[in-house]
Length: 88
Image 1: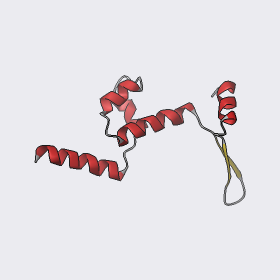
Image 2: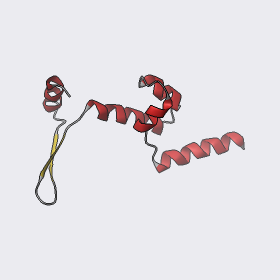
Image 3: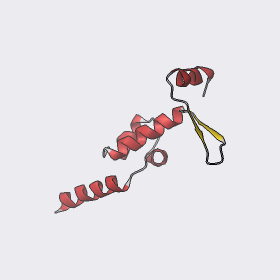
Image 4: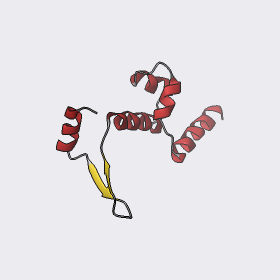
């Protein structure tokens, strides 16, 4: 999160400012980690093998990649159906 990164995020309008219910200002900024997390999650949602995603993210193994990938319920159902179709 260097000054150059912050400058780019600000220039692109990717910094978000919101107010909490009590009026407290909350600032959200895009971080490099957010991009990695989104990439991993999107790969999982598209059904990419965890080993491929792990390699693309530069991880030594899938254990670390699991931290970045989150599977929603619909994605899990599609994966279960693919398995069911494959064995039946």
